[in-house]
Length: 154
Image (cartoon, rainbow, N blue to C red; front, side):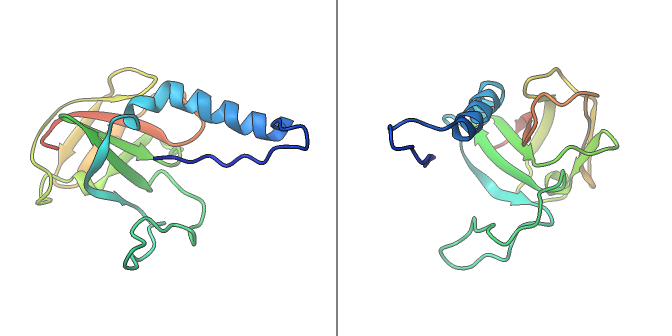
């Protein structure tokens, strides 16, 4: 569930800044919506340097975070598809997701395909170090790009 709370002006309309934010959310959803709509949490919710220590009742508390990087990854799943959101774009054009290492007990099955939403299939390797993916030269969206990973048992 997502609740958007936009302040309205005295005429009951969104101001220009709020319209800009709403347009950015709409553009992002057009590319990445399948990784949100109709999905469920995966076996772990994510990994990365900006995950705060879990407090009972606040598993997803990231209020004390620094700026997200490409090492900050969050997961959703739908059917036999795993979606991995990486929160920044790596300058070197490659992202590795250690949480998807073959040696992890919650990683079962064999990855068959990896593509970036808003783009095409990508070159990748999957081994004991994780899933390493060569990214395209251009980002498909400004924030939170998503890998569509098919084949793992979700």
